[in-house]
Amino acid sequence: MTSLRTAGSVETVGHALRDDEGAATAEYVVATMAAVSLAGLLVMLLRGDAVKQILMDLVRTALSFAG
Image (cartoon, rainbow, N blue to C red; front, side, top):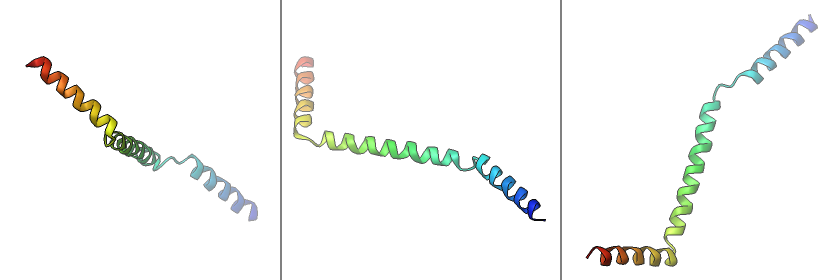
């Protein structure tokens, strides 16, 4: 009888290891966290004074060229 329990346990463990339920959700979480991290990095970069100056110069150049 013990051997039947062991065989059943091995089968259950094997099924659990092959089961990929929830894998797509975990992938979405990883992708979402990567996107949030990138957005945070961009916000930090755009708040810097050097970037603000570059963007202002770009706008001034575009406006003076058009007008």
